[in-house]
Length: 398
Ligand code: LMR
Image (cartoon, rainbow, N blue to C red):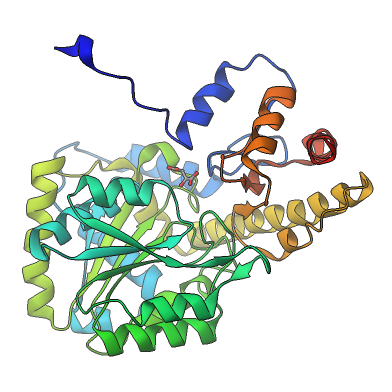
């Protein structure tokens, strides 16, 4: 049976990591997958995480299953981080949270939940978006459609075009929004734009689904929740898929959550019962360790201060690299204006490099960039900047 199977293409992002690992060039640089690297090009374990793990190791007494929807303490800590501890959706019980294996796991649970409870709904994705978004929703049997997001002439949000399409979305359809650090472009909505989007969403009866994978990487943990809060209006329904891969550096532990806000607490509980059925049929219940780390850190004043400082340090290093990248390209005599990269936020920037230039960087210099031209700024260091910018200058000139 299997001899007739035609090989599938490598994954647009994780496939690059496989190729990078196999590349013997000592100067190779991986600017593909969205993983943070420190000044030494290493993806560190945060100190707050190590300290929490020491406590967990000393205190844990069992490895029994978690519930289908995971740890209640983790769910509560996640909601408090998303909305702020005093928010109405928490006090009223309108928000419920299911632990999930990473942001991708949370999105897939959301997709299966939507396919089960809202059959026929269409999921609207930004152009461009994370290439795994269409994969996930289609795998759940949902239709996907797209709305304009990025204007390559201004390197900013194509806001008027975006709103125009949003105003045509039928009631009950799902609108996927990147809560901050838009992947792949690095350009986000302003507070005023979030307010306008929230207005259209409410008027048209659209269900927003926020993909919140980079909280803390744009402007700050609280500041980055502006979009979430703008959409969390009285009576408004909402889904949030969040991830602790990046802001806790817990990539391989797969720690995320799906939070659902319903119009009433009863509706939230009914929805959660379906979320649980989806999880049970998929992976039964989530792994415990990563969620225990997050809960320990978020609920301990000292570890939390340490973690917040570590998130700020990651954010600041990325922003320093953005500026150094633009300066170094200027020094190399590159004529193309890359100054917009210094204004963008999060790990990614849409460089404007063409697929041919991306290919040339890989073949000639072992520099790995996603085919769309998305660059992971967090993979840049002071040590690799000169090599990187010389290589870009070369491929732009030829
Ligand atoms: C990325 O976009 O690089 C990250 O979200 C990692 C992934 O799973 O693709």
